[in-house]
Length: 195
Image (cartoon, rainbow, N blue to C red):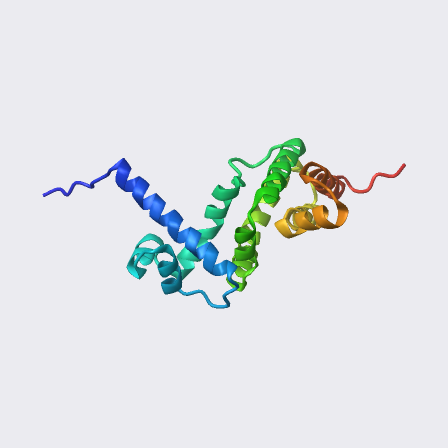
């Protein structure tokens, strides 16, 4: 006997809405500055059962891992394809900075919580790999040390924390800050220009 898998657009939409409601609750709980996250607290805030949270995310680690893609969807910072030129990389940085500008305080506070910071550190490894891969495509003949330096500089200069420093301390908007970041990356690749 063959079992048919039931699929319904309505059911899938409801499941996605439930996932988003749980992730909204996660953001709220994290924004309160919790040191230790609990699934029951998230479930209660979302108005769902603890079992529903486990069914959607598997465990607490799965729930927290889902926060990065959720935040990227909320802020529009997903990167569809790696940039193949420095101009394309600059467009990605500009897009990222414009979306940091629109990030709400609740999401920012969630990522400032201890579990949020831990997640950001783990995600940094993934982002560093993406930047490194993009720079290899862009400047394939770059010596390994210079590539690593440029990738590390690119990662550090494109975090939301650093963008806020560009904005708050130097009065720069997203476009001006992106230009400064790309100058630093280009200098890392090309080396200092002597006149």
